[in-house]
Structures are given as C-alpha cells and as structure tokens.
Image 1 (cartoon, rainbow, N blue to C red):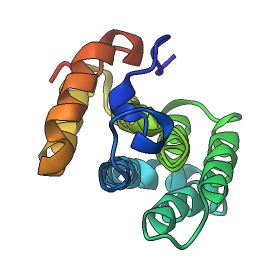
Image 2: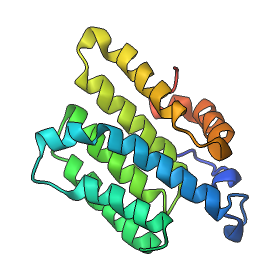
Image 3: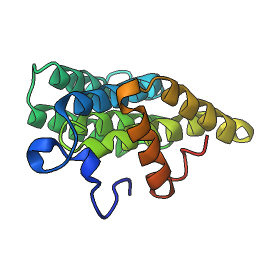
Length: 171
C-alpha cells in the first residue's frame, strides 16, 4: 500500500479541486522517472530483452512534454508493473518503480511509489549487512535530485506516508 486512504489535495490538480499546478505535477513525474531510472539496470540485468519498464519511464517523460496522453503513460506503467509480477527481489522492485513513475501522470501521489520501490530495489540488491545503509544512501540520492519547487511537498509527503511505504524514507 503506497497511497493514503484519504487523498492529499496537494497532489490533486487545480482543475480537479486540489492545489497542484500542472508545472509541479510534471516536476513530480520527472523526479519519479529519475528515481526509477536510477535502478533500472537492476531490472535490465535480469530481463535484458524486456523493454516495458524503460518504455514506461520514457512515456512519462513524453507526457510531461505534452507528446503523449495521460492514458498512454498510465498504460505503459501498467505494462511495466506486469513485467515485475513473475520476478523477485531487486529486478521486481525496479520494474515496479518504473511502473509507479509512469502512473504519476494519472495520480501525482504515485511519486512516492516510484521512490520507495527504487529504494527497495537497492536494498534487495545489496548484501544483507549493507541493505539498510544502501537504502538510506539511495534515499539521500533521491532527495538530492528533488527540484526546489517540489522539495518541501515531497519531503512532507515522505514524512506523512513513510509508515505505509515500508519506512524506506528514514534517511
């Protein structure tokens, strides 16, 4: 579970009654894509012939540029998550990160899903005695790439949803 039971209006676009601007929605999607792409090699090493997670990341970036519809990005996200279903460990989490990034076009609050799954992928790829430390390093890496315009929003979201995101944002 990565979404709260009650939606935060800060992650709902203005035209739907929330306070999220299109520009900030795009920044959330791009940051989620950066998080997912950082761990994509963990999937591609296990499934080199499966383009679905990479295509999902490319699709959400295209959505931010106005080149594809929200539905196209969301659909690509579903296909990326489908690529994860039969896998385990780091490869599975990396594919889910890509899928979550692509569905940010539909629901902005999935930005934490992409980040959380990326951290889980890094933890799963690390030796057991380094798993927590590597996950914290990934969390800090992600935070270093947060655009200033959405930094406070995302950090507050991490604080509020850390418990339902496997406590991966304790970094």
